Length: 365
Image 1 (tube, rainbow, N blue to C red):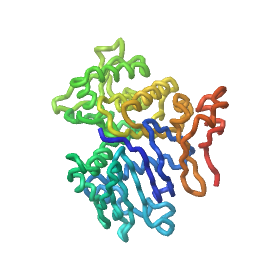
Image 2 (cartoon, rainbow, N blue to C red):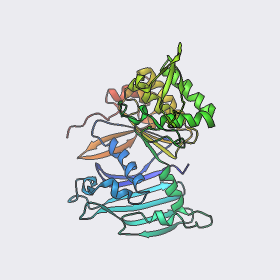
Image 3 (cartoon, rainbow, N blue to C red):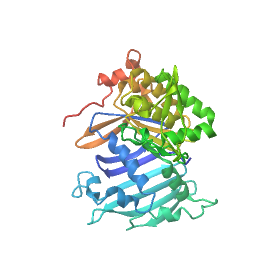
Image 4 (cartoon, helix red, strand yellow):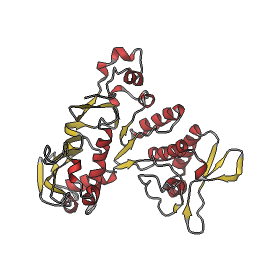
């Protein structure tokens, strides 16, 4: 697992005109109205992740670089990014070219204890970080680029919204894909298969957690077919001789299985990002989900975007970042408990949001 992302500056990305030295903690719960910019913040993580493979940024923007600039190219000439991972830092700018792709300019990496900065260059389609990560450090085998690269590559942006019959989580998957849970959980059955074989205590914890939300659930049936593929078959209590198929799980049930697996995984990534994890869940399941999120944040960094007052009821005020829209730009504010002490004697965090004491509802400009 790489270092978590401690501080972040973004200028000119989509609705984010300017976000300066924004501090990210182990638990970061983003709330706000539709269109405020929560999804754009998560989209930023996807873009940076794409940069960590050759031609990944080109593939990501697909010739539409102008659409990623705040207010378009007439208003914003480039996107500027500064990130800090523990003792290391990484800066760059993204400038669109005439073909609709980004050139990476003013790329730098930092090692703060020694106050060393290495300029990695400009005018590249791929980050020079991908080359510099192989260089040794100031007094160690690895340099700042290596730590930055591994931290970013470790990010996981989970998106379990597609629970249709055609979704990967309901279909057969190669049993060999056991190393890490895919971002869309299409390998959920092989991943659980690997956990059952290698970390049975974690597997048992996932099963017990699922039973709290799906009382009739007994266990998974993880048996490869002759093609060595698996799907998420399962048993119902009282009907152990009658296997159930993944299509017989409700959307909320299969989504919770994926969430529980992601949050209980034994070797979590440096940062887990989840957009609207409460989607389709019963209120009682949301309270269990909140507990999973809190416990996972003790082992790794979490970035969660939600529309659910019931979910944020389970977190402290200072875990919450309110996203609003002002003059077309997204604003981000981490709440301070001292500002709500009197209110919290009577109301929960979710109730304060619902009553608009905590702002974060629709803004009409």
